[in-house]
Image (cartoon, rainbow, N blue to C red; front, side):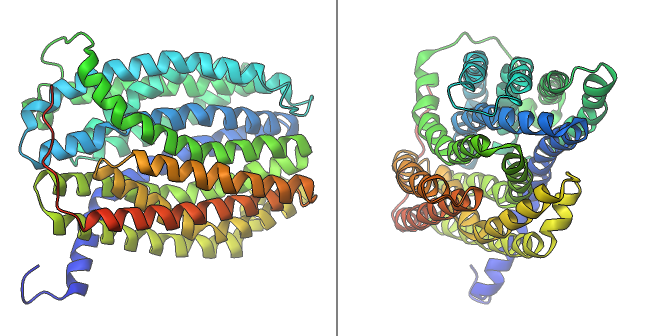
Length: 453
């Protein structure tokens, strides 16, 4: 910061830089979330039982998304630190090992989705929704490897601070899902299964398109991403797993809190499940903004670490926090004032609309802790600090949030609103602890970037 530049002016400058990097990521995340909304709208128009089935199936499928996101989050900080340190020649080797990791992860997650379908009966999911939920999961499971490869390719581009391809791939996927989902669901009359096949097909198309772009784009030519074939090597994959698995657990702990909540609400009947599905989709859509900003913050913090700029680490984080809190304020206002109107866009059922509007008020409350914890986690990823955040999320979400939510919602009989109260408490605890962790580490001297083997 120059002597003539005030702290406020520096913050605004940093926010502009973060905004430019984050905007394509936000649009990419929104397009991905919009794909879930397309699923919900199509399922809702097919029938209330199908809507409930897709809601349950989407809760299980979200586990696959979370595991992929979490483990492959090892790629952006690794790439951004190398880029910041001026060691771009090492990025291609890391990328090729990350592709092997993504492929193995995606194949394993096919089995996870199939296992989730088997578990619906012992979980007590309402019987009328169960067959269609199983059909949806069997169909969408084929998209798990495509999803993993897509995240790997996207994270490489994001890690070198070129986020535009993520936006284009996301928007193209959304544009393809609408007609394909309608065709398979209504014209072919495959119902929930058709929707699952449509999503899986789009995921593979996104991965293929992004791979071709990275291969041909001059911007990536010096990285040599596809210059040669590298067999899987345990050393680099182990390093990626050491960084990515704790992040995978952290993301899973947060996401599985929402999944478990959805599954518990699924035992309360189709009205509460449908209302929850609508409300959580609205809240999740708004969350894509701070999530995109957090992803940009990871890259900016990682780049500053690679460059040895401790002050840049703190300013990048401050810019991210500021942008996220502004976004969360706007989304909270929309959820409170427009909840009923948003619900009516998806379901014509008055009971579903009324309960969904109430749940959106709860969603407005947790916008702030959710955004704050997302930014703290993103900043910590840029520092490659993953293990302690993993324990924090386990404690906050499963030690506090879910038990309290279950007690209020099921034991005390408050239903979905009680379970949403548990979400708020768990997110608040995570936000407090993760924020404290980052600012404590940000005051320490930076360690040198490790050697890639």
